[in-house]
Length: 325
Image 1: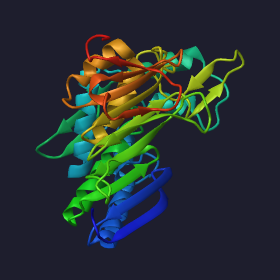
Image 2: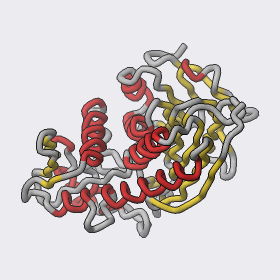
Image 3: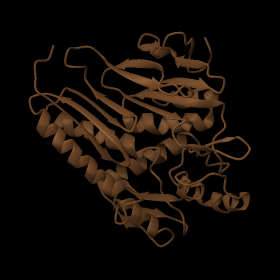
Image 4: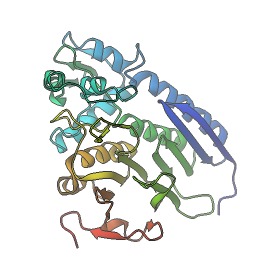
């Protein structure tokens, strides 16, 4: 059991609540440094910060390359890899579509003609990265990068990196539901991360017990509106159709070594559906998932069999990454 200093905080950043729990000799210094780094990352990666690196790339769309930092290059190259694996079902050039849907104020779907007009702008292959000069370029005017499906995960990884530099061996960070863990709890037990029930307010579906893993959930219940026909219009858009994804899944939780992977994969699997989504997991050894379909049936991949704890009365089906067992 660790007998050591502790530091904790709850703050606001990246447009969400952030919770930190840090344990170690330099806990307070490490926490302060991690918070500073996260603020700096937000000022680089948010497309809503006018002078951010992502903001400058977006403003220069169709006009030429923009010099970027190693960190921004890292998140963009990671996003491209996930886009290639998912064949574009995860695509950070979804910015024109997210602007069109505007979930903060929307109460109905955009006109079909407007969706058709912006769809050709959503194509990750139009993002050109130069590893030698560390530049990024968008080929077409009006294209824009939106890191909503990967930015928090990348930030969580960088915060954990900072904590390790201070010798921290036990920590927990939750950035708006994107959870990253370092080591075990101070008492030696595993971290327990709850998974929200997608249809029961205030209830958990279950929890996963992890050590040194990231846990991220994508669901149709965080940001949505009900249109005049009674249809749920959630914020996870299918880049191929321009509309909210309808893959048969309503919640996807991914457990992975990095929060970047968990963040992007949970989105990609949600859009792709169970069959294709399980194929994506094969690219990342040791990565597991909890899937909830639109009949509220819960599936967990085989590697979570020992560490997933279902809430009382909720049955679970164990699946392999290639077939149902």
